Image (cartoon, rainbow, N blue to C red; front, side, top):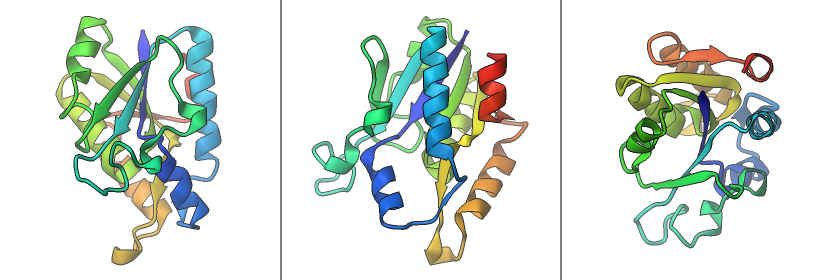
Length: 179
């Protein structure tokens, strides 16, 4: 059975979008919501990953409004939540042992942010022997203006580096029709 990993869908994402920060792909939030609905309708396991910084005053510190989950991605009763303090969800949580004890070897990934926590989590999961699937139009990438990179470029490079060796890439439509 495939589990869904929702990475860092917290208020900081909506805040960046509201501030006009360029993101890609268009429709990614709606696609994420569709994937979550599909997994819930199928009764498949959903695991929420949230980032909380240990640095006081950080945007993602425990009590920051930016660290709270976006309401559309709030966990329902029975859905598992892990709080991480590192980029990879495997590095600072018990995610690996949870997946292993539940017999879950196949993991689909959606969420934020493509070039950071999604990337490091997918790579770590693959290195640990999990079959990782990235739903390519249900992850979000933001521009990196300080280095002159637009959001679509960051997304394309991230997906290009993950494709094949670390993950299978699928679109929302394919994920929801096949699984």
